[in-house]
Each structure stands twice: as structure tokens, then as C-alpha cells.
Image (cartoon, rainbow, N blue to C red):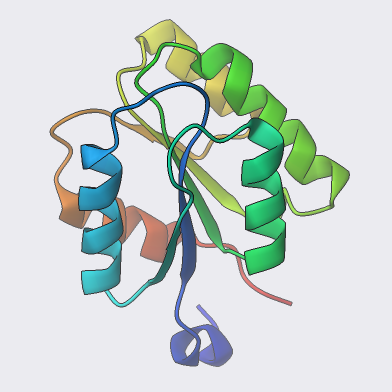
Length: 139
């Protein structure tokens, strides 16, 4: 991590994409990230993939955490990734997915560019440490 990154707080967008109406976990994650010293923006419920992309680009986030429990991850996450690529923001953004994701789908999401998938019960410290070790360097 560069000296500039040490000074600048890691910026995270915790996003709820699609029709998934369960956001307690996203709020818990957002609070844990704030407690870890990260700057956190929460998208709110029922966001379209393009809404998430716009927020990530406008907020200049380092980390995009997508919380999805609806089972629509194979449709929605690739749309978010494509949107980030269209804004040249993909390489600068650590993409994480949280939720109930089958192993086969997890492998496919990682091929698309998701850095890690965190399932229910993952210790917060593990997620925070993963971010600190893997957040992209800023130019």
C-alpha cells in the first residue's frame, strides 16, 4: 500500500442490486467497514445494475461490495462488471459479492472479475483484512 493510500481512507460502496429486499446483512457490513476506518456509501434497496455502476464511478470507490440473496447473481453481477468496464473503472475497483452463492457460480463470478465471494457467517475481520490486502493501488 502506498503512503497516499495510508492517508486516504478506503472508499467502499455497499450495494443491493435487483429485487432482493433483504438488507440487514448489508447494514451490518457497512457498519463493520466504517468501524474499520473505511468510508462507506450504501446504495439502498432495489438498485438496477446501472445505478450501482453510476454510484461506484461518481463516488470513486476502491471497493464495490454487492450483497445479493435473490439468486440473480449470474444475471446482475455481470451487468455491473460490464458497466464498470465501460467507464474504465473495472481495474480500479475491488469487486466483492456477499450472499448465498453456489460453488459453481462462485467460480464463474471469479472468472468474470469478482475478487472474492463471502458467504453467510464470514467473520467481519476476514472481509476487512481481504480488502486491506487486495485494494487496488491508486495512480
